[in-house]
Image (cartoon, rainbow, N blue to C red; front, side, top):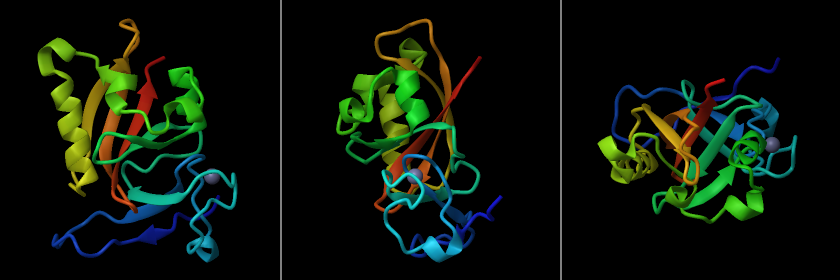
Length: 163
Ligand SMILES: [Zn+2]
């Protein structure tokens, strides 16, 4: 429908950097070029406009979380609320590891999740894959992509429920 708004964030000292696209931190709608200066989404009026590398930026309907470098959840999509079975107000400001754990915690430990999020929140451009589960459920696994997100600098986790 609308063309993605491409935005290159300067200042990381990397010559080759994947273009960032802007999207709403709640509904994932991409702002129209004329709306690029708005901080708040003009579609749902709930989310702040953030940006992430094109290859990980979510689409409307995706389940995603935005987590800061202190592991605190800043925002999430409606689909993520559904997956986690809790509303935004119950999840925002909680620590990520209170909500999800790596699915193979014995092999990798919670530290693997923490380290991925902290690196991504520092602006590390590498997108990593991980499998997580809700903290209180062992039978559920969500394939998850973890990558950087801005501004403010944070990590983006896009969950893909497997059937
Ligand atoms: Zn929105």
